[in-house]
Length: 389
Ligand SMILES: [Zn+2]
Image (cartoon, rainbow, N blue to C red; front, top):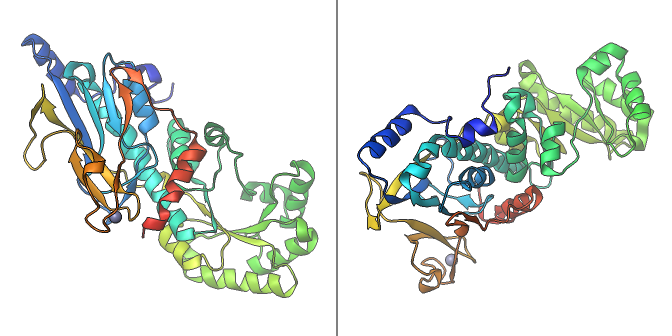
């Protein structure tokens, strides 16, 4: 069948780098299985970012929840974090979870990379909408994860049916070129859409199939008037330089004819820079590749305590740590995990710190409440006021 691993493959530890499997074999042979604390953190964003949005927590907890007596303390999904900050501490017998390192990092690195990119796009768009259209750019087996991560990062909607189902939202979309090509005319295709598709679905026509965008936009707007939610302009990269000009022209022609409520939807190779440049004129951004294929965040997992003794490799601070955050100014501090947040005062504004970490799993018992994607997204948006691109 398809070239994918299923849930059982992942849960049974088949998704492991061989050196973990060999480590287990050796530890068993020499009868060593210490209680360890391992910390997951990001050394550098590599793409010049100063913050990231944590995602992949739900899947990580689900993977490890079957492990006997494991404990997990972490930032909740949707938390903004910075480099060098621990985002998760796993405590358990090494042989019980060491083999899952590859899968754990895979969950966190990719989902967080996508959520972070989506957050950057939404931060750039502000009150304008960002739709995730990148389902087609990734292996279909991971589409639900990609769409969920895009949504919790801040995307306002996702286009695939399975992705939307996972997050409990209605999928969003416009009209593909194929419908217009088969029907043979933009207005006729939009009419057919209008007749057949449920009235609650927004009418967004695609206007660049046959003719000049401006004339097609006017034709569609004159035919549908108030019923038309928007028109989509999909830019081939060859016309990139003219895109803003085309948008301005279309906006002008619509406005002078009284169609100022018809929204402009832009798609085609957009990222947060394009969104910043176009957000004054575009109402909805369809973002594909830059979100769905976002660069992964290179988390690593390192042992920081063995049988209660603080230890670590070179270049890494030993001891299990946590992040405390000023509730007023978002300033952070890294402290040993047994310290109380209330013992510290913010060294920037003097306010009190709060624990960012939560007890997600305690000796095998899941305490994490698996928040709804909608609530995680709200958590992300609530942190935007402290963030810059
Ligand atoms: Zn502060």
